[in-house]
Image 1 (cartoon, one colour):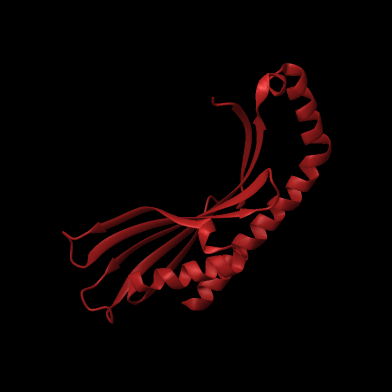
Image 2 (tube, rainbow, N blue to C red):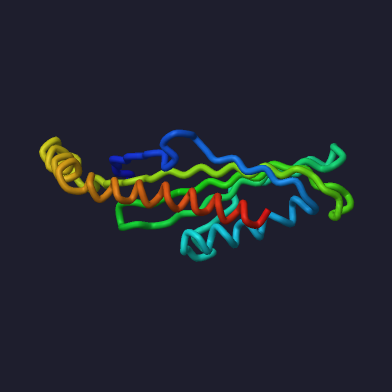
Length: 164
């Protein structure tokens, strides 16, 4: 049986939806694993907390165009996680030594979930207590997580720029 969930999402980059980094250099596709290693190191997560959700490789163009989308999850506590989306758009030349463009887009969101399992947790009374708890005590903790999320994404972008 599927139960309801109260979910609260916030963008970690409050002013802009994403950070864009442009790299022009050899072997754009080969640069992706280096960036993913930096993501793992900066966020302090395991490889199992990262996955590739989308991969496109257009063989009908020269140079070959590609798009790769990866996600990484950092857990702050049992209710709150940080989800980072890294999208790579580029062109891979036949000769990997040739210089081509690679765009890296980084977006992040802080997600808090309250599972509402069972009849009591779905009642209006429990939801009222849950909202009172969230806005009176947990909101301050969540605000600290949001600040940490913003700092991590900015540090991640700085570390990727150092690779370039």
